[in-house]
Length: 329
Image 1 (cartoon, helix red, strand yellow):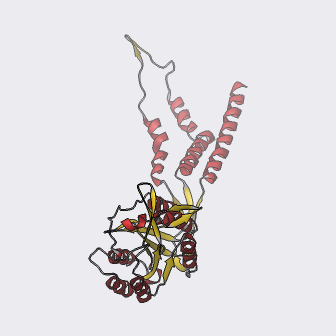
Image 2 (cartoon, helix red, strand yellow):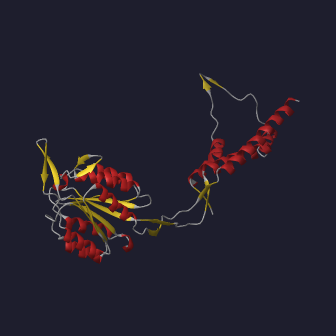
C-alpha cells in the first residue's frame, strides 16, 4: 500500500488559489492615485477568463500538484515481518565489596586487584557479545542494577569500568544480588533468564540468604552461573609494602549449591587465565532464538512525482518560449 509520511502538506495545494484571490492593492503617493493605464472592456474580461484555460495555466497547476505530492513523501509499505534473531540474555552480577581490593591477580606481569582483573577480562567478554542482551548488577552490602538488559554493550562496559570498590558497601550480600536479579529477569521469557554471578567472598550482609534466593531463582526459571574469584594466597599493599594475606575466603559449598539448584554451573577462577576460560564456557551456552522487532519495509517514492513535476515544468517553459516568439512575430 501507499501512504504519505507528511500528509498535512496537502494544505499547500490551496496556496495558488489564496494568492489569486488576494485583493489588489492601490499604491498611493501623496494625493496622486495611480490607476491602470488600460480600462477593461467586456471583451477584455472574456479574453482574461479564456486565458485561464490556456495550456500554460494547466501545466502550472500540474507542476504545483507534483511538487506538493513529492513534499508529502509518498512511501510504499511492504508486509510487516518479525525476523527471528538469535542471542543470549545475560545479567552480570559483579561483587564490588571491600575484599575485591586484594591484589592477587596478574595482568601482563603486573599485579592488580581482583576488580581490575574482572574489568579487563569481562570487558573483552562484552566485546564479543554481538547480538546478545547484557545487563550489569553491582553488589556489596547492597545490590544495585546499573544497566538493564540492553544491546548497548558499550554502555554496559562503561558502567563496569567506572565502578569502584566499596561503592555498594564493604560487605557482601550475595543473596540480595540474586534476589534483585530474579526480580529483573522475571519479565523475560523463561528460557532466556540467565545470571552470571561473580564474587570473592561469603554472604556477610543483606536480608536474603543465598540458598533461599536460589530457591526463588529456581521457581522463576533463572539459571545462575556462579564464579568464585581469588587465589588461595593473596597480597595487599600497605604503606608501600606488599603483604601476603590468607587469600580469598570463599564459601564454595554455597556457590555450588546455588548453581546446582538453578540448573547452572560453578566455576573457580584463581587467576585471569581461568577467569577468561570461564567466560569461554559461557560462550558455549546455547543461543536462544526470539522474534525481533516488527519491521515493515518502506520505499520512498517522492522521486517519481518530483520527476513528473520537472517534466511538466520543462514543457511549460517550452510553451512560454514559443508564445514569446509568436507574440514578437
